[in-house]
Image 1 (spheres, rainbow, N blue to C red):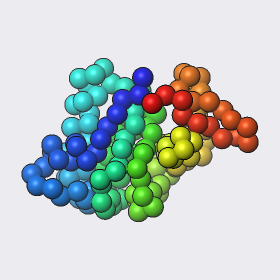
Image 2: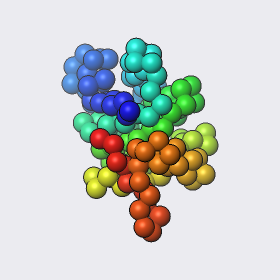
Image 3: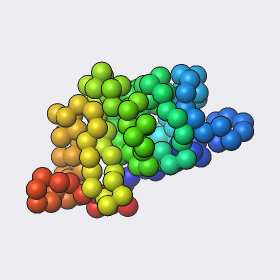
Length: 146
């Protein structure tokens, strides 16, 4: 099973107003802690899809606080959807710095690694082994689960 995390909803529930940027470590911490409480309530998913649609700016400190720290403290396969080039630019160096990786779900369902390549390969293999993704000709991997 893949647990869904809608960051826009988490951000709205975590703060007052319609502020949709993740640009301070305290903001990132509040969002991460809310995600962790959700994980705890559901038994802690090992595969989660984090949807960035609706998130404006994301800085390095929030990428570190939300994505990297979440992965360090609660190892999981993290699938990212709705990320922009700006999100990617903040997330990738943080992941590489911590020797972590995530998988980006493209609109066509294909998975692109982001972060440390060896770790990303392990994540892809976990998804294939669990039946959540299929290996396709040419080395591509596609998500099979919704």
